[in-house]
Length: 381
Image 1: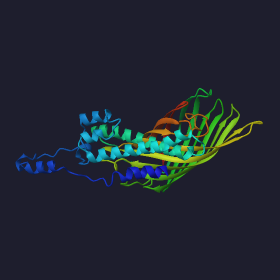
Image 2 (image 1 turned 90 degrees about the vertical axis):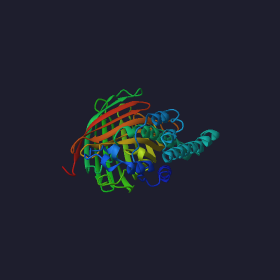
Image 3 (image 1 turned 45 degrees about the horizontal axis):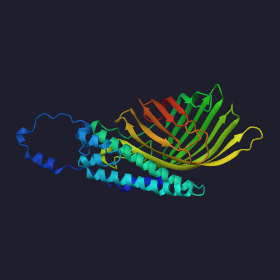
Image 4 (image 1 turned 60 degrees about the vertical axis):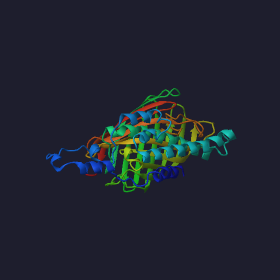
């Protein structure tokens, strides 16, 4: 439900993105004498040749920071882009409205467990829209200074990775992990498997999952489509804490939406926003006479990212995000939905047709960093 609200909030505001040429430019072109037109045609950079891309201006960029961090449409408004400014104001207002709609009843009810779940989801949706609007505002101010990244037109059907993960957790002594993973793309289906093992302590985390693309072009063959998509995801998780003699196991359902921000405004070309909501049922299984604990967990995430590369073998993306889950190292071993999750920055890119890298940094109740080498199989050589 929250993802649909997010997609609708962004989709209704922009409408169709249309290239427009100003009347002043048209008149100026008519006033140029024929003999003044140069005989030699110089190549025009992509960012300068695209009539939908605004030029970088110092004043709108500065206003996007102050007071633009509070009023997100001020930068485009100063630049004369009233359409983008209006959409920013509406998106920010929608975020504030959802934040109030969820946060006020939570405070007035004393965070009653009978209503905290859906209200907390509404509150997080408001925080997500505000965060996305803030980051989009900053990106739109700086993006005209450089050519935007492009959505990868295709991604390989199979990727394998192996890497190293470091965990700095004050609650546990383990630090070093070996991570392995696999990702398969089959038309509208995506399958994933991953494991992280601390050899010294025997701490092992295994996750198996998959996703079905409900809306949007498949990742393997996007052709000329943008990155807008809606996925239904499911996963199973087992995390064994050998030294502490307990395990965490469970399953989850998740709805994740991505919106290509070029639909929001030409200023946002090369970037995207994500939001997702889900639900997990999990259990702590203890060794000995201690009773197992069954609990449910609200899953929620949102983020803002950029596409890397402009065609060719180099392609990928980077995402700054918030994740509300508590069952991973940076979120801590906590149940319920009343404790904040963690923030992260991740990137995944193919440097050639076969080789790439993946990296992730997360900060919450623990600090987690991971870097992996990626090898792609299938597709065109």
